[in-house]
Length: 367
Ligand SMILES: NC(=O)c1ccc[n+]([C@@H]2O[C@H](COP(=O)([O-])OP(=O)(O)OC[C@H]3O[C@@H](n4cnc5c(N)ncnc54)[C@H](OP(=O)(O)O)[C@@H]3O)[C@@H](O)[C@H]2O)c1
Ligand SMILES: [Zn+2]
Image (cartoon, rainbow, N blue to C red; front, side, top):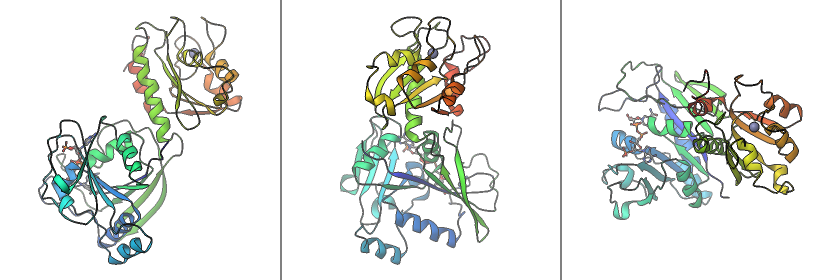
């Protein structure tokens, strides 16, 4: 498996959370000192990414400005400038914008199929088969990008954070208010599954600079696999007691088996259906992770062995789930029993609502 680049998001916002005002003029929220720091982050990066909205609104150069930093890159055997990256669904990008015309460095445009754009020699177009940014990171990895700096705007930041793909966030907060709901926000609505930990707080000329790192658990791979498990619940019979999906992976996140409630036999549970597809002596089980949209059950009326028991017997050391089982039928103690047996349990409650949406047939469950 290729290793995705480390993703650092950088944004400057007003006190009330805006990236800009609603006028055509760009609102400058950084100071010189702040910008010098961002320049260093650019110099450390292999590639810099902004959304097409930012290319259109700000017409940025996205180059390392400081000659010393550029020389240091060259001395290390790296290209003088990072690769420039943008993404578009429409293809609405002006080939005369500075993104394309400045800097002797490769320019990459990730475009959705059907995007109407033609850049000739100015840029390489890469068609994105899926809208998720994971595919962008996979492709950048194949181009040798190990560190990616994302400089906005709001739509792009929202997507990286909601997809759990941001490893670090640098947020500069300027002491001004915008107060205009038409202005772009740092992040829009979404489900943000990966909590961030504050690691550094500084003042640069009155601008507060905050640094956060994403919690190591859940990882971006955990979120991707858990979302896949949640999506599998759509395959369950409509009246299954709980409509649940499960994905079993090896230590690297490669899928070993999947399952959903009611698969094979109407009484089957998702984790059970996934485990049934593997030889119980499969050595990969000893380092596997079970992703389940619902907490594994600990008491069952329909079968002698609970999913918690099956997971324990299979020797699976780690379980990631989204929705803690509500007390509708029985009191579930799956998470407690797994932890008591020394297994690692990661609950991603930020995604629980997506699981509830598949289970509104149950008493008291609302989407
Ligand atoms: N203060 C700061 O730090 C800072 C930094 C950067 C930007 N800004 C401000 O932010 C504003 C721009 O933000 P924004 O949210 O409008 O734009 P944005 O996030 O820069 O770009 C959004 C665009 O990216 C493309 N895109 C998004 N998801 C995609 C996907 N899955 N596949 C393909 N393309 C995708 C789409 O382009 P198409 O529309 O072409 O399809 C979308 O409209 C500007 O006002 C700018 O000044 C501020
Ligand atoms: Zn079960």
